[in-house]
Image (tube, rainbow, N blue to C red; front, top):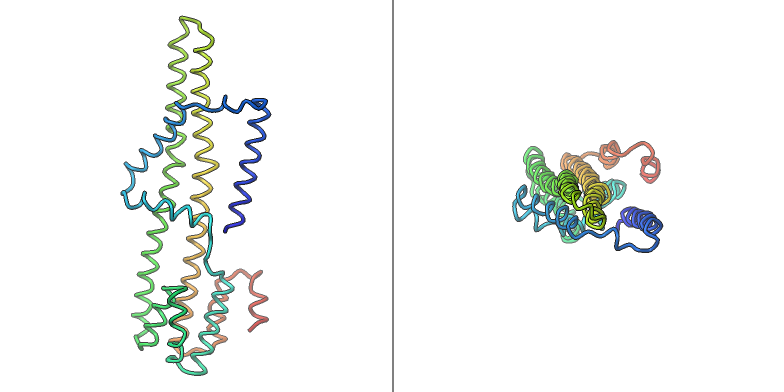
Length: 262
């Protein structure tokens, strides 16, 4: 579970709930507009179907899962794992890594692919080319997830503006009768649509898209560290050199513990 995401959601819901409750004096129904929901919600969904292939839309569950749950290995753990593999390969030979392939394949297919190619004696150029293609494919998959929420962030407020204009047109169209009730309903539709669009863009789609982009950059860096570690192991480098190559990816504030452990 991503604790930061949960904390952010709780704070956002609590603050908005308190403001809505205070403004409405407990009558929260005044903030509900079926027309606004249909315009912003339905409009945003229609944009997704028009802009993205169906298989990308079907993956929205996995994108939300990535937002809520983070099971990725930390950069520090990656350094320790690769240093341990380098030590074993240097001490017992490359073929000794085959005993750990079963567990590695379950945990990290990218690392398993690189180690399998190393154990099989493939040249470093082929290993790097294959792993770089996997990295490229992963980047494209991650872009699709962020794109989905970027579209909602972009077009949600646009559909909210349409809802606002519809409400205003309805309000102006009823000025002749001067029915305060009708005018108030039309104005409520207009304002609620704007509110829904702002919430969708700034409290839902925007943060989720930004978190997915951050997770993607973290995973890409982790994969790059693994790639450099595999190439170092394949070259027969000293385990300390292998570790130093990967520590270079980590900010100075996070290096002290790793260097002490080495």
